[in-house]
Length: 174
Image (cartoon, rainbow, N blue to C red; front, side, top):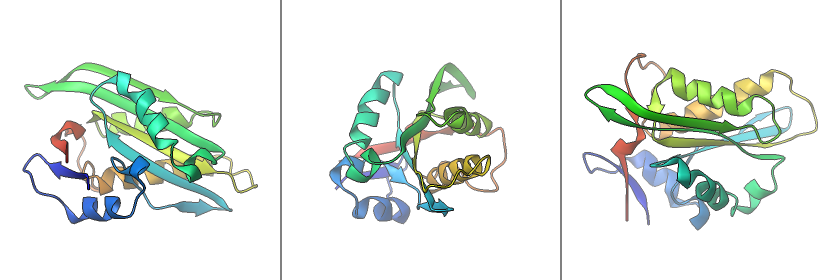
């Protein structure tokens, strides 16, 4: 079984719980719980990203999961990659995709920028419940994104700004 290990080489129980019951398509992803609002459901998925070139393959991997493939908005996402040298971010690249949910990718990207997270991809999936949510959908997108970051050990609710959160410190180990 694949587990994420911190740079200190110890597995957290969170990662064990996150990966123990998932299909092979989700084995390298940390996922949030499902949040529901007026029958619409939202879930976030997070994985390490070493290069922007990996994004299409990772999205294709995620879409192998049948329930995600059937979602109304399966891949609203944002990503950031950079190197971290001498206390500063350099060679920053970032991007986002809305998946027909206008502004959702930018919302996730802004969240990643605010907490200074790098070297990761966050994908949010929405299963539409039949009732338009208006701006409340953005709160759901943010909530599941934050939860996936917290489960991965990248962010905590009371973290201070200014601290670089490098997902490269989370090493995928066989």
